Length: 213
Image (cartoon, rainbow, N blue to C red; front, side, top):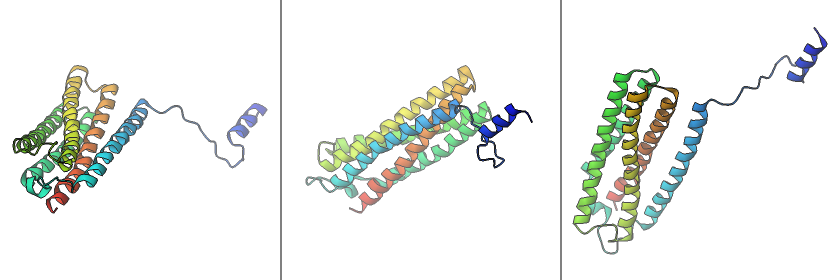
């Protein structure tokens, strides 16, 4: 063995234990993108945590107005929950279809996800419109302010998710399953699943616990 090879091996294996440590190159764009988007999602979750905290503090401040048990329609909330949870499954199917470059199942999964998301938004909009028409708008009490802020913020995120979904369908149609398109699809799936997790919290804290107040 030459002197150069010996010095090189000693540098790679300074403790002479027979293991050569290899230093990989920079992370792939997919990993970097996913990491950056997780940071965004965590910041979004911190924001929702503030809304949850505000609601927990103000839930009893009804100012002689209605309580949650008097205004919540559990049947509609159950339908919303089923729609959003099913949409998480169809979104996952669309993600798998994108990974295997299957256009039919991708479009089908995304279309069903879109329909379920729109049904969720329609029911939520009707709930808000009904409350306002009965004089139970966000200015009626601190409780209703916190309720409209928390649930409405989640609804705005779902609306943004539906627009993003349609954009992803258009991009796949125009550009195919390119690497950059797949990275955006991965970020969209993370975003949509995060909204489902947040809704489970909204459903449990606002509607289930609120119905017993």
